[in-house]
Length: 393
Ligand SMILES: Cc1ncc(COP(=O)(O)O)c(C=O)c1O
Image (cartoon, rainbow, N blue to C red; front, side, top):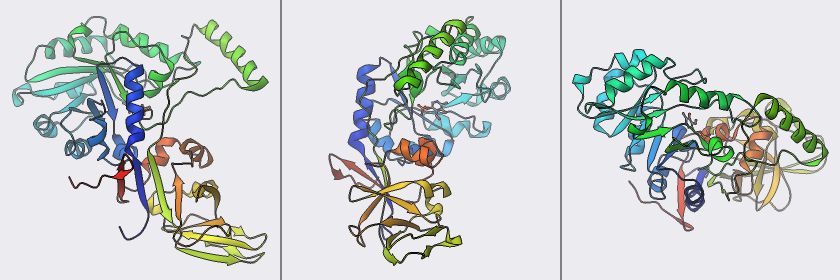
């Protein structure tokens, strides 16, 4: 690594999250969702999480599945349909595939396979992928449940909302029950409906034995106290009546688990500028110094995944927060600092004491967009018990 812009992963924190989840929630399959370069953590994360209790992985594409296969032997599910002529590659690598429509199912020629594992996706209201018709679902089930060549390993759906004070979660759950009422779910090895917020907010769905977890595994919890102060109390009363009138199921207010984020995007100070009052900085001169001001320059920019809205974010240098000023450049940013900051100091863009959810809020992003936007070419370093694990695979 020459340019000192890198991602550090605290593997112990991710281990903590997985163990907390497994201790608290009772599932047979903990499916780690490692789409988007494991949410920016790098696919090598698969090597660790599958030792901590994640016993299944889920990805977006065949490319991601094959990449994660380099780090683990656990089964992998591709959540998006892949080209029919690539199913053989999936079969060969113990990669399960999604049937996302009746038409897709019809195009699979069973004679071509000896052990292809499929998960049937049911559309319950997300209206993105999945079979929506009960007769078609029943036909696919009847056709594949006892087939060895193309095996129905799983059935799943995806919730569009958190279900907190909204009825859509209940509607989707009821729809799943209705659409699968002519088939025997007990005969399907894996039934997985929920994601992190389902786990955090809702009682366990009795017939599901798998849960697909992304955010919560990465240490991003979604429960928070939304009823603080007088306004909060009024909101609580309003939601109470809304739930009653619309018959919305009750949700938990806190997950009561101790989550820790493990990802940290770091860079360093490569140059310092001393400005006088009235001096300006960068393209378009969008920043003007009000007083004598020290500016630090760091080698990171939008080509590395920092969206332009990071101009509203704060970074940490020696445990102190400083403001990014001026525009985000392709490969550099400028930060308003003080006399404590020197060339070579480490700068944390997010993670560590720069809370990822706060950064997401300040930059008009989500935690996922902040993490997944980090360019995959930026070096990832994995720390286990404080020591870098640099074993080449
Ligand atoms: C189909 C599917 N399941 C599960 C997840 C994981 O969601 P979360 O990160 O909220 O746990 C995703 C995330 O993108 C997804 O697309």
